[in-house]
Image 1 (spheres, rainbow, N blue to C red):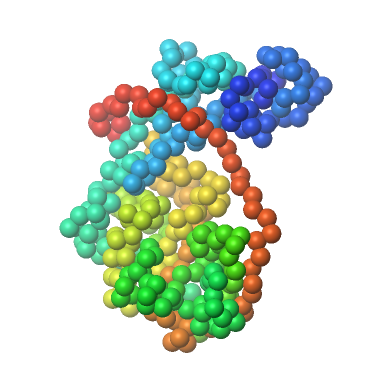
Image 2: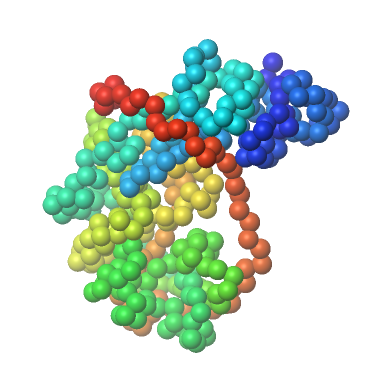
Length: 367
């Protein structure tokens, strides 16, 4: 029965597993654990054991690649009678066996479909001399969105010389441009967001900084290329051919992706856009959701019923071309000092080592 307690947090030797179990387990000191006989541990039903397994062994083994990522270990109830197929450190082996038994599940090495680590044709083309062709397709498929004079957003500054001066909240001076995701040496950009927490993340803020925020409002309606939208693609397009996934992976990638992002930005400027709405790199760490989420190896972005959920995972940022405050395109309505009163990290754990990958099947076995 799923409502009966199976094991408790005290059953585990691994510290991370114990802490994860304490976080999701049920307080019930009136019952001793049927496994370790302690009445002090947080109790786990079969379903909570499965949740714990997902948190620690699946989410906890997600590996990021240059583009994309996937969990090294996966679990399901169909593998519960399997022979041992995942090599774990000695101290974790007993805990894993306990979870498999109590959850009636099995752990196994995940065989990813190749698109999960960047084998997506439009993404590969963006990294090649075919880039301009794919960028033109971006403008064909991604929508234009207006930011109206009735809307506002935030622009954060760290340690400004004169925090009350509205010009401090414009795009950086020439000597500081060319280091961001979308700006280059000849194209200054003003970065902002309607999410203040994201602004703090994006600026890599520390408690030593003097932090100020400007509330900015457009003086006219602004035309922006919206790269946060889930686009409709031609019938029969798979993950391997998906421009939607290519752009999604591009903006979840690190600095090695900036050159491509800047080419999209320069093309948007030439097409007379006022700027770009793009996915924040910190979207998933901000909302606590799982990146690169799939169901049976299919991206959730491909399921019609899950598209709204998939879109909600992405937090939009704004990048406006030029120096819009100097050119009176934006007004600084209000300036405030920002105080960081508390820092809190929501953490879960995963195994430190899992002795590498299992056997990787041929690509046609994963289609």
